Amino acid sequence: MAYTIEGSTGAWEVVVGLEVHAQVISKSKLFSGAATAFGAAPNSQVSFVDAAFPGMLPVPNREAIAQAVRTGLGLAAEINLVSRFDRKNYFYADLPQGYQISQFEHPIVGKGVVDIALADGSTKQVGITRLHLEQDAGKSLHDQHPTKSFIDLNRSGVALMEIVSEPDIRSPEEAGAYVKKLRSILRYLGTCDGNMEEGSLRADVNVSVRKAGEAYRTRCEVKNVNSVRFVMQAVEAEALRQIAVWESGGTVEQETRLFDANRGETRPMRSKEDAHDYRYFPDPDLLPVVLEQSWVDALKAALPELPDAKQARFIREYGLSPYDAAVLVAEQATAQFFEAVASGRDAKLAANWVTGDFFAALNRTGRSIENPPITAAALGRLLDLMADGTINGKIAKEVFEAMLDSGEDPAAIVDARGLRQVTDTSAIDAAVDAVLAANPEKVAEYKSGKDKLFGFFVGNVMKAMAGKGNPALVNAALKQRLG
Ligand code: MN
Figure 1 (cartoon, helix red, strand yellow):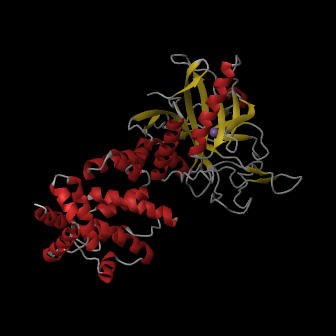
Figure 2 (cartoon, rainbow, N blue to C red):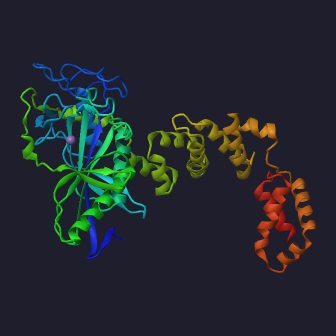
Figure 3 (cartoon, protein in one colour):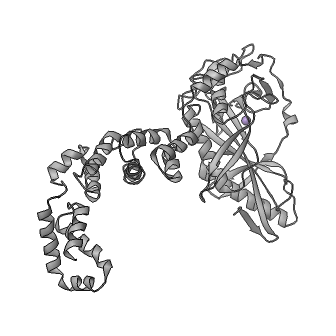
């Protein structure tokens, strides 16, 4: 069912479009050779171009352009073989040029699409309007001195991709799913690290509200939201604010706002300027960007398998549910780990162990999939011990915990602790007889039709065998004895 917010005048639909700024993974900046590494000492990665010294000329970074094209291809978007850089004029203390080199009328990437999956199992397409390349600005530091502001130009000139969506998003959930999916695609492509805490990925959230069937009403832009959770909260907070304005007889004014995560509300930043306020014009220092189709084709041929294609393959090849497959493909490293465990084994069982006990172990130990507490090879060997009947599934959990604690190989743990599954039928029969002899009244109840008691007997036999009985053989022996 469509998401709406109930106001005093009835249901309101929420309309959202996102502009995501994604920092391009590239060793140097968009128009200079200065480095881009995060966390460097202030102003240690600034060339004369980035500091806008008179007479300096920008030179486009071929790799940054390739990254934008790869991203466009990953978003199933049109690649524009001719694009152009424009100057977007505005004043900021941390923008020494007095303008940002961006792309306005002729972006490098045109219309594309992102598929998002929703909690109710449905999927939805969100249109991409465009992707353009532009420079980042520097950073003003206001908390270093009681009366002075400092400027750090390390970020000045760093390549950004601005990825603009169509206003296709209709709920906080869809907004969150869109940012997550976009981030996943960028990380697969290796074009942006998606690190929202470090500011490599930040979202401007355009929100408006309307009654069903209406044309779009005025929107407001919530600037620089830096986590998926905050994007979702910002959509809801801003929609609620606008509904209150309309319902009290007021008018929503187009403006740029900030999201205050502590208060869970948006507040005004500045009245929104229109494109003509920036006095865009083609940058006279730069030629148009002209790409050869063969170069684009070569980049396309070298793209990795992307999340949607990988998910479809996991469903097809491994028989996974769409949900399990989606969880496993969200990060490339997780998908790789799963495939290493599943290779030549029961894939469904591998998926259960990776998304279950293994993910829980990552959380508990605070480790990452890149530096896992148990390797894919070791987890695979644990699965092998179950497959060949050396241990049963219950004992496998115990061995898994021991692997986490000791880092030892599963087979060594099984031997050292004597955890081998008991398949000796005389030992199993003896345990069954002992349990039945100790519970004559339960046996009588079972025989009078209380079938549910079978589980009680299985549990007690397994307990008597320290969990090591072969479950199939224990079941068979009990069935036979209980007639
Ligand atoms: Mn921008």
